[in-house]
Length: 87
Image (cartoon, rainbow, N blue to C red; front, side, top):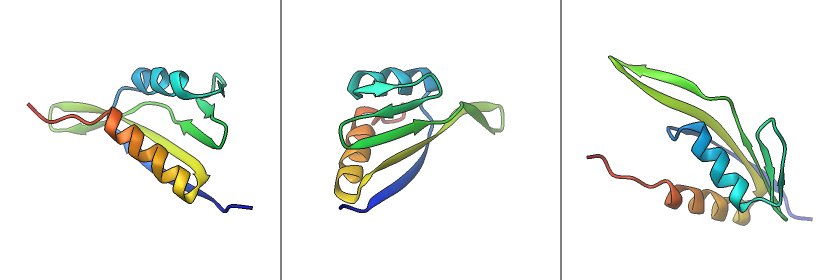
């Protein structure tokens, strides 16, 4: 049986976009922000804000759970989806 790992990320993407993304790729989900695929699980925390001077940035904790290789694949796909460059 593969060992399940957990990867935690704090995302600066607004929570509503995270929910939309995980809803589109998951097999099932609940109203508390947990999403399940066939071999993975993601938990989307509540949106908080980090303040840097006068700038407020959303901060939402994500917890990815799956076997090591699959977890890394899901995190990589997530990062590619939300990749952005300043500007």
